[in-house]
Figure: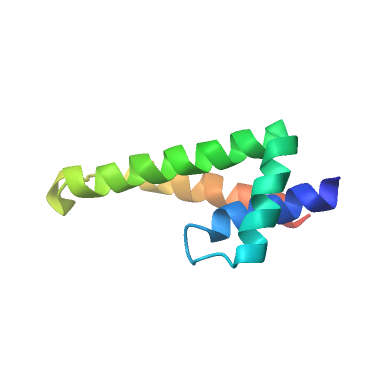
Amino acid sequence: MKHFCQKASQLASDAFERDLTFSERLKLQFHLTICSICSHYADNLKLLNKVLLGMRYQQKDDDICLSDEDRRRIETVLKQNTTHSDS
């Protein structure tokens, strides 16, 4: 089942970047009906996309401000996570 979940999560992500083929949509929908974990994942992707799109339209570039310290902290965490996931 792990392979099917990996494929389904990839298709759910891909759907935000391109139109899925009929076959891909069918496979994804079938898997989401039988796998609650992947279904929740797909729902969370949709929610995240909606939130990010809303933020894009609500904020101006001038409103976004991170301190240098916050930028370094985020960069450090991202580098650590990338290093750990490569292992």
